[in-house]
Image (cartoon, rainbow, N blue to C red; front, side, top):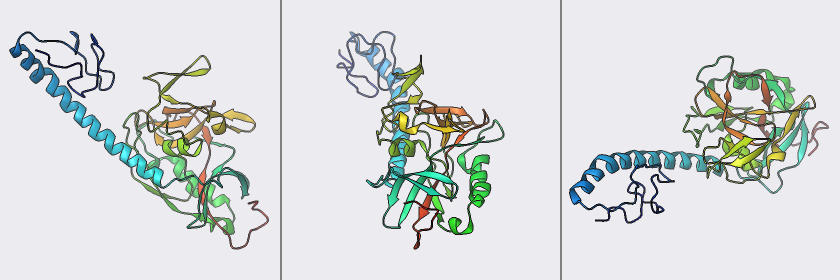
Length: 291
């Protein structure tokens, strides 16, 4: 009796002969998951005691991943890079890279070209963007460093804080911010729009290069150089707002420009910070703004 017909009994993926582990769902059977059973009773016992429990777990995983992917797609619908994006403008004391243009509301999404240096959180405990020290600093001290006429042009937005798609770490509540950091979805979207984060195109870093690896924790592609920044003329890594592999880690951009999806400990060190903001058009362009 052929139980499998050369398919994984859990996720029904086509499997190679003699394999003992499904490459998709990870179902393992030391005797080989593609096997022929001479006795029907043994086959039924295997299905009831091994396959069905594994299938139940797999269905839960797929349901959760579908929900996370739907959430990420919702985020991406709100970030649609314009053909006019990519130039640099001066606003306040900083130079900014334009990432997106919302023509309907006459607003531009800007990312600080160079980094400032700050820690993400002052304690090595579980934390989300909503409660981190860096968010408080950006929306208070950093925001108040702008002149009053400049502050009027910075638009407060609802910031979507999605879970980490690779590790299912919760991103916490959505927030209302004037100044924020980019998320994993956004840093992939706005620097080349590769989609590598959504399709989980993992890589491992070693020997000064990235190598494709199913267990890798980096996202790296031809757009890495565009993500490289510096502080005080020294190349530096920089924080994102998305959680890392666990709740006391946060995702970062590596000094090479690759994205470390697993992240760093939130109180690991002071790292690069590239503030982002939505800027409203001014009826009169001031001398400080070079558009």
